Length: 432
Image 1 (cartoon, rainbow, N blue to C red):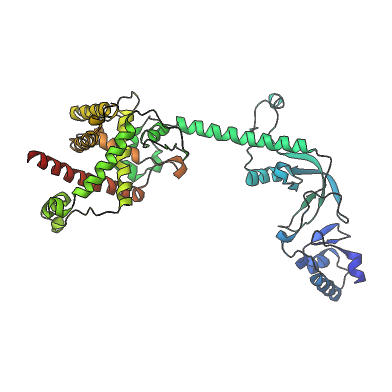
Image 2 (image 1 turned 180 degrees about the vertical axis):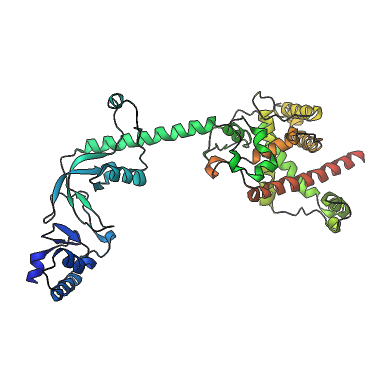
């Protein structure tokens, strides 16, 4: 025990042992190795005895996470070597300490998201006129704790750092982060749809043709255009102030009511099984042609389906009279129905507003009844489908992949079938 006291000092408040001749802390499991390498005159049997003493000590850290590193030390720790060239992180009372610029920069980037605003090159005289955004201080008094890899290397010793200085650094870092976030958001808002790199071809996007159709239009504008009225969500997933879409809210609600009625109409007891078989037919002579259209979906499913159609309707409502928009073309009938839908929705006459569901139904039938020529995206309906393929930034931005877009197509097809059945039923009732 006397030899242990000559070589080591136990610091229970830090949960470490310090080798006094080497002036450094030693991991307990490395005592024998340390004695062999640094103190070869100590006999083998004595090394084992000293290791046994260390093993029996209370308040000792056997892993790096158990070391109680003071942040900072109020006064120099006995037995450790001091130096005055440390670099200490001052953000949020972190007090991480090292002695290299690369080390402190790496820590600040990984732990606090710090970004160096001073880039390489340029006029150093001009740079020196601007305040640095660093969040550490150099010339810090510190002590070497462990030399072993993975264990805390340095501990800062408290100096006369005023709290006001720490608060100023913290506020400066918060302001820098806010500025960087605003710059990113402004860049995203101006980002326009453009062709990708040829070496990174996406077969799904090539098949859909969405990129050429939407090319040159700001992503944020397209994402905003398809949002239903009320509680709009911007490209980053945050709720924003509702757009001035007079009458569109009533149209959205009318469309949702219409879709519920359409699914109610698409029942065998209402329109007959043959009607449901015909609307479900996909190929002449196929064995599946006798399978009826299934419309008994849950309320939540129908509501989810209706949101896809409502999004396309909102997109057309907001963009069809804009100069900068995707190059879809409304037929004469579609244009007249959309114009009359706006007139009815914006009137104060309650009797006229009762026609909203009927006008929404006629408009959707007109969108479906669109002859496709060379450019299929001249169809307003398919243009709306392309916009549904945009993924909001808070969901990863970019485009919705094929396996995730299948439910959207299923919702559009299923709901459109129900609307066709409902339209046929309404036409038949009018004829009778």
